[in-house]
View (cartoon, rainbow, N blue to C red):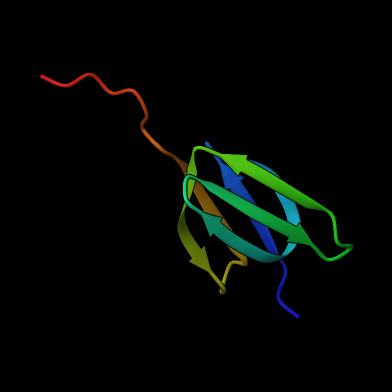
Length: 66
């Protein structure tokens, strides 16, 4: 089985992740023991099976318009 390490802002925020689902502006993750975590205002930027890493990126909210 392939478990992922999840990174946000360069920091590992979760490991042993086997499930990821994007739900609009949030991502729901589940690890091998069934624990879930929801990350708000992010998107999945990259999934790399060779390094077993999943990278989350913050959404840019509230940016001023010109």
